[in-house]
Image (cartoon, rainbow, N blue to C red):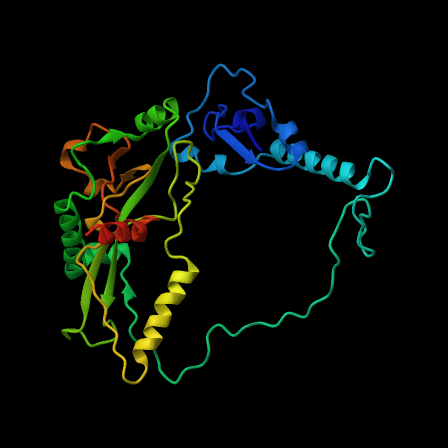
Length: 321
């Protein structure tokens, strides 16, 4: 069961002017008491609302005290009803050591947990074959790092990874998606830079800067400013274990393994499914956007690195060839 309610009913307010924020909430539950408690908790009729956008979205991700209180009351009511069966006998036997005998509980036991050693002593002073992350400040000051990142931006623009000819204001896209009851995802693209061979001396040809522009797949939101939900899991444990098994097989005597790579593989596939819009730092926005938009977005076309479903898109693309 899903029950929908408004955040302003439970006291969600803006941090500056203390205006109510009518953020839509949804609880998915199989508890009738929770469903009944939150059913009909809509806006009581506020004359003005603060839009749930920008800096105001951070505070709306938390439960308000009144929301928590109502949820706890519903759970307590449900537990009391379950423990007091119609015939007067508890529906479940309470744990003998439980202080709350009216509430069903699992048996408890004492454990002596042992810690796993995460970093073991090593005879080597550093970890080999690990690239050094280059911080953002160093990217701006280091010509080689900046050149590698700029080359990646230019390469993705040539691939038309995002459509810079169709910029939109984020609040307009959100409003249209809500009005049409259409799902839309919003993310952020940003650069990364790694230095390969950082342990080598300065000037060594093995020291190289590698720039990447990726999609922040860990902070994708939908048209309601809630965390986006993805149903597909392409990098499942079974497929990862299968790849490891192939590596082990190739290491056996008399066996050979081959690895094929494609340049900009994910950007060769189109991102299907829910429409995805991306924003970026102002210094990377197209010049024609400056002064026209407060929070400009562009539609993402190919499956950029970091999107939650790029492997599935690439698999579909390779199988069609």
